[in-house]
Length: 298
Image (cartoon, rainbow, N blue to C red; front, side, top):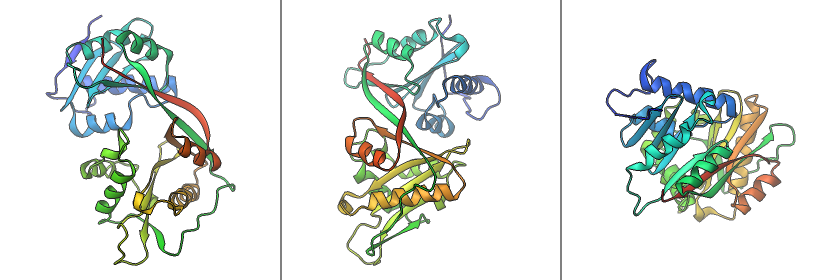
């Protein structure tokens, strides 16, 4: 088996041929088999907007390993599984990296047993579980009743600063979401799924209020297969305790139902007991788990 290091020169995520096309082919085959997205949104956006700048890509017949920002994404075509492709790619991707100070994160979006075995051999332990929860978009949706001291409206240009401030404070300790920059927001804004009408902000009624510019927001998303997502719900800590998150969530759910969607999903850390309790109380149920392995490779 030959594992090849791919250079950044000429790597074009949109190319209909070459390495990028092969990576996309592997992803499509694996996604179809596993019923999940094996290459997460952050990885796809990196490849689309920055190519292999700041990333390392190894490829073999039937699989690839992508390393960027200390995160490892490894995807193997179903037809090439159980032949050591995943192990060879993981070892090649991590072989020459100095992790004296930082650990590596590796996701298994399908929580595949093979991923656990590879992680164990590399010295990575199961560190985090992300739950996917879902509920129907039907007549059982709760009402959305904002307080008189704030209003809920859709995003308009100029809201970026307030939105990012609320996001940064709400997710100050979150490993991914809390680091969203204006460039990150712009990248998502340029995606086909972005719809300003589905990005809801809670803002003070009085324009000159001493309150934050954005009290909270609910960013909804519609997947190509017609499934809605509670993409991000954030409440500025300075506005906590007023039920804003619940109102924003309910506004977004009703918006997705009004679009004709019949089902909505969300992602939440399995150990975030308060959030899981809120979503369970809102009619969501746990349907599958994604696993993250973390450690210093041995």
